[in-house]
Length: 116
Length: 113
Image (tube, rainbow over all chains, first blue to last red; front, side, top):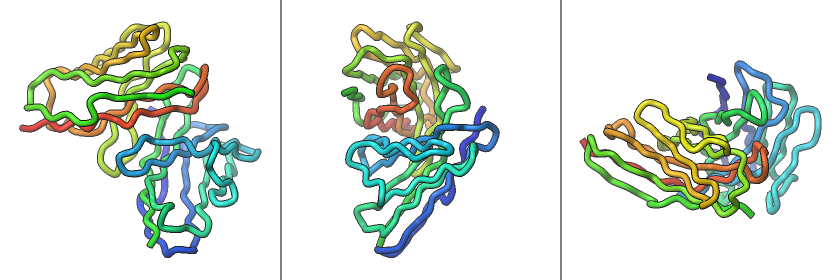
């Protein structure tokens, strides 16, 4: 099946620094990728839609200047958490589909971000 | 606004038991419904995808059903094994055939040897 790789799997950073998370589709091209966030014991919540070659679309309540998304190619999207704070500590996970609309959604392994 | 609810939040069963996980959604105009498995600290593994025109899908010991009109889906796991222990999530598109998914909070399943 299709493989989505996410890196790093976990990261600890100091408050005020920035962290970049990569999401790659290994064996298919994805013009669209999605970034989700999951707080403990909560649902995965969609943060933004990453569009190759254009600006990302953010969900209501998600700060676009804080969560920078770059979809540089058809196989790579990055999420940068800028000026991270402890409340940004969460599980971030990306997804992509090799085809639309009839397709499974494939997810990366997720990134556990801890801001200290 | 689509909302997804999963019941129960947690379930503990002895090995070998058959079990049912429940998922309900508020907007029945869905294109499909997907069940995922999430292991602790890990990503999601897609288990079953049911199209809106289908009533059920089967994969090995897993069977998922879909009743669009009532806004419900069930995931049936037969002859449960300790390796089935994980959190099971169901998700539906936010609208139409959108790839954006709305997730339930999941059911944490523990299968005891």
